[in-house]
Image (cartoon, rainbow, N blue to C red; front, side):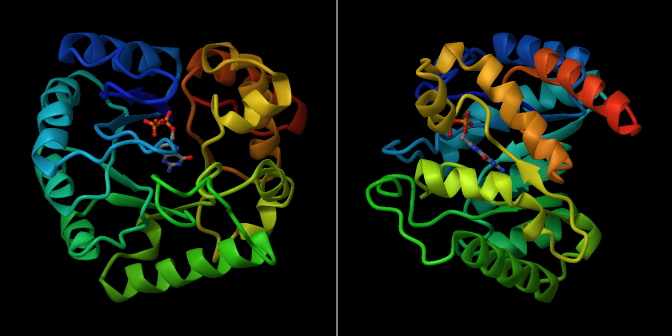
Length: 262
Ligand code: HH2
C-alpha cells in the first residue's frame, strides 16, 4: 500500500501533494513501482494534528480519486474516519476505507457497510491530539487484540462481511517505542479469524528513535521494519517508499519460497 497524503501537515510528506496534478502523478508513480493499493489521505493523524471538516477533506481527496480511478487498476483506499467522506469516495470508485478510528465515529459503521468497500479497522489508544502524552497498557498485545476483536463484531453486526475486513494494530497511535516493538515482535498473536493484517510503520517516529534519522531519511529503517512485519504475518504494508519495499519483499519471498509481491 503506497501512501499519498493530500494534506499540508502530514509528518513525512505534508504539503508535497496538495496540488491534485502532483498527487495524481505521485499515485501513478507508486502504482508503477509495484503498489497494489494506493492510500489517499485528506487529514493528518500525526500526534497534535489539527482536525479538518468533512467538506475540506472531500475537497482535497475527491478530485484526485476521480482522476486516478480510470487510470489504474490498483485498489484505491481512502484514509478517513468521516461518514460523509466515505460516501463521497465510495460513489467515486474507492475500493477500501482505511479508518484509524475503526468506524467509531457516529454513522461511520453504517456508511462503511453501505459503501460495499473493504474496510481497514485500526487500533488507537486515545485520539491524535493527545495520544502520545502517556500511552499505557497492562498487556499491549492482549488489549489491542481485544479491541480489534470487538470492532470485528461491530462490523459483522453492521452487515460488513468478514471478507471485507482488514485489521491493523496502529503502530504509533497511542503507543510508546516499547509498545510498538512488542506489537511488531508478536504481530502473529493479533491474527483474528484469519483476517489479513496491515502494518503501517513507514517513516514513523519509532524508526526515528531507533535510527536517529529525520522523517525523510528513514527509508532503510522503514524497509527493515516492513520486512519484519511481513515475516511476522502482515499481508499489507502501508509505506511511503514503495520501490525500496517491493525490492526487499522480492528477496524475502524468494528465500521463503512464497510469491513475489506485485
Ligand atoms: N498511519 C498513518 C495514517 N494512516 N492508516 C493505517 N491503517 N495504519 C497506519 O499505521 C496509519 C494509517 C500515519 O502516517 P501518515 O499518513 O504518513 O501521516 P499523517 O497521519 O501525518 O498524514
